[in-house]
Image (tube, rainbow, N blue to C red; front, side):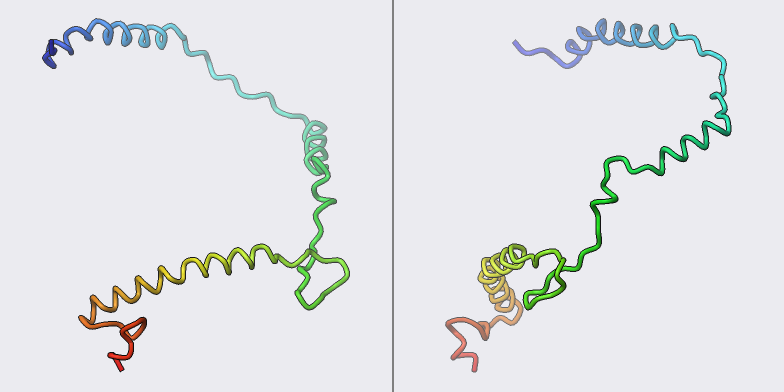
Length: 127
């Protein structure tokens, strides 16, 4: 048994009308009140708020110090260590991506020129 779209819309119409009436009634039930301006802060309150905002929240400012990065061949006594892991990961990613890039270059250059590339096993023929 399949329902026609018009029958489906007709059967869901009471639910749709009920939801619209419910939402509209809720919106009309709230009476708008007159605008009340926020209370003005006194000079003492403003000064106290400024003093509170200048205090460090969690001591983060004291912990942060500009430290130079230690170079692999040495550097200042107090410095951040050299990011060897980042250098190693970058090298590994280039090592993994290089064969795919070379293959893409070869196929693209072969498609453009209509001949074999100067790289790879067919390079002796290109010379």
